[in-house]
Amino acid sequence: MPDEAERARLFTGYIKKFRPEPELSIKELAVKFHFVPGQIKNAVRQAEGLTELGGASEITAETMHRCCYNQVVHKLDSLAARITPAYGWDDLILPPDQIKLMQQACDHIRYSMRVFNEWGFGRRVTYGRGLSMLFAGPPGTGKTMGAQVVANQLHMELYRVQISQVISKYIGETEKNLRAVFQEAKRSNCILFFDECDAIFGKRSEVKDAHDRYANVETAYLLQQVEEFDGVCILATNLLQNIDAAFMRRISFVIHFPFPDKETRAKLYKSMLPPDVPVADNVDFDFMAEKFEITGGSIKNIVVNAAFLAAAKDAPIGMEELLVAAVNELRKNEIVVVRKDLGEYADLVFK
Image 1 (tube, rainbow, N blue to C red):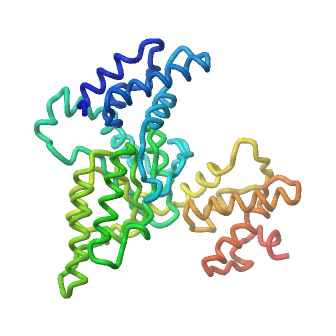
Image 2: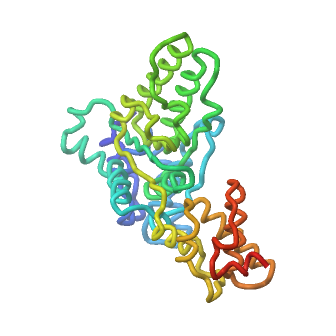
Image 3: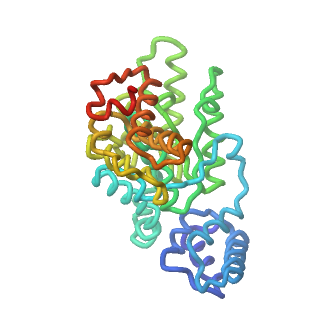
């Protein structure tokens, strides 16, 4: 298997007909895809063919990555669910410092070859050179969206690990399942996304019985797998305080997804509306943001359901549709909204 430097030389050598677009980094490709020469040659030939067919003058990053993934054979689909990334940086509403952290994390993949190979840090850091990120925040605050943004930014495929398929009550089975997940992830050159990872990344407990002992063994094994993984691993948790301290030390970046404040909620309402949707003049996003202290996930549900209410009337989305959808959303969580809660807009709902 050629090393990263040799893979970069091979990619460069095989690209003959078209130049790569500025966004396409050959060094980044060499870091992401652990290919033999034949795979590199086939990926480049396919990318050049698609570029010629499309009448373009440059090989785009999207085309090159797609052709690289076409060379990959793996069984990860039987162990995890593939997510097609649909979001970019403009869709993610987070505090600026957290966005900056996520961008810095992506740079660890972009500039891995420069730091570890060209600058010699590879001789200092012999293991743990992959990228691990912990997304921490309440449910519905955008952690899954954040994982999609990272995948889009890096032009990498994203797989969500099904926790129910990993954890087993039988001794040794959880480790076996985890080993299979990470092995296939290495073959697939994809991003691993562990959703609600508290179930398997919990604090190691004091050993009181055999169950505690084996639970600690599973956690230790998982720590080892994450540390040895050379790829990108994203873990999401609703309960940051439950994450084992030893595991936290092995995480490259911790990104906080806080419960949105009023200003952020107003931005979320606006961001959920597509450019072509008709919106009535009476819509008051500031009122919605102030009255309903909810997460982005709930806001998305409200806006989508309001759109269906409006479509059924052949009318634009107005305050009536938004408020009715909001009341229904809160009822799901057994939260009752009464007339006085809606102030001047109460008659739109309580007729």
